[in-house]
Length: 127
Image (cartoon, rainbow, N blue to C red; front, side):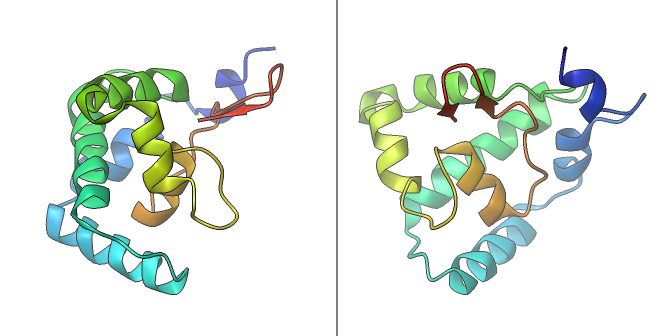
């Protein structure tokens, strides 16, 4: 069964709808509050990655659902390839308690809706 059918209503773009009017100031305030609540130390590198992902969502998710996490992880890995790609990203975000991977903690910190296809149940992978 295709999970997309159960996670998206007709005409609804959950990721794009969450970011389309989001200012960088509001995003920063939300991230700082959520990180403080979770006792997660932030630095400029965290914000750079979060801003990059949100801009990617604004640019690339306006016309499609963007529920599949692998394409967003691929975007981040390519964008941060010179810093170590996935290894660098996991180093930054994998320490957030009660989350796994890179995208899940970013979404929690930024107050974004979860990516419903963020886990590959066949392989047990979290993005």
